[in-house]
Length: 188
Image (cartoon, rainbow, N blue to C red; front, side):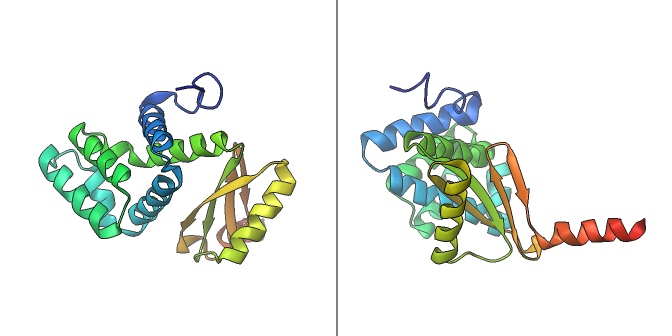
């Protein structure tokens, strides 16, 4: 790790960070950072969309062999890159699939730091178009003074608007929050 004290210092603290750091080092060495990041974004969305996939990675009763077979099938079905597929196999073998979401978050943070960017986690009620993502990235760049990569999640429960987490700052512009605030105001 050439930047273990700088870029990856705080990000790699903890188990998820160590696994993400190892994946990043392998992706950098094989020049596949973008492919791995795309595959991990697809996995993140798959975990949000599929209760079965979320249950598979969280289940402590699935054997290592069965978990490895299942994640290999998922990786093939989702057309994930080979490094991410191997990474999932290692996680299954080491019984670390339950930490996958944290590893994805840590990997994104490491990549963003490597590129001199910040990462914004954006939740929307519906998928955002490329134009909307571009406009949002430009607005966030103006706000923080550097490039911002965006990790998106779709959650229909927010009804509309956006919830943006940028570092420790949370900007909640969801309709759900506005309605809740309105309801509280009406109560007195």
